[in-house]
Image 1 (cartoon, rainbow, N blue to C red):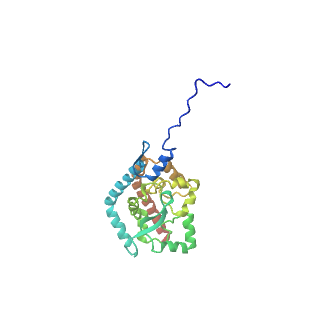
Image 2: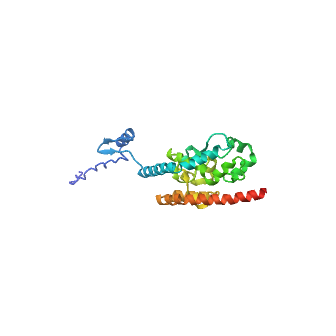
Image 3: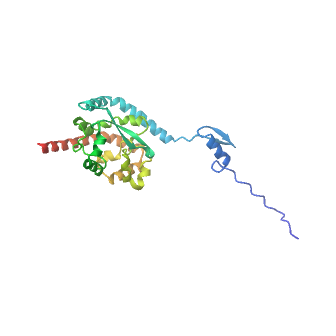
Length: 263
């Protein structure tokens, strides 16, 4: 005859559910995403990335100030663009933004109107363009106007990118935006590189004047992505103007050499 256990063990109670496991809460979170709801005592709240909000406010405030302070330079660049160079004032080119979303980067036009078509029609010029990390020296690019060379050397042609910042396509400090074919140079780091918004200025520009090619450029870009802080951003912003002055002086010396060769 089977004996009964005088002290039967109490049946195990089901573990309390959590928002991650309870299907009712999961359904409510999907239905009320972006709002507030109460389901079995849990409150569903919209998730806000406070760091991204602070960074966006930082960009909008500083870009707005820069737009006002640099307005005389905007006027100067506009006049130089139109001087003996009819056509649109702004040049647009497709670049890769955050998460690889393409956008139109804005620059004061420093070239002839059909610059992109001209480049692809001249095979040797296009090969040099690709071999030189998708850019040409201002003194060997026949598409650039005389005033355009000054805009390039002084970086005044980059000023409209402040509007890219206000539109949320770029940030003040970050890796420089690249044309789509360039992404192959980043290899396994491509996804991480595209995880941040491109910048008007960046670590690559202030350390090497934006003249270092691949793969060293990848190293500098990834260093910034992995060590991005507000302190580093301020450091880069403070070094940007001296870097532009040095770049202008260096290009001026190159211009003198080119003119002496012509003589």
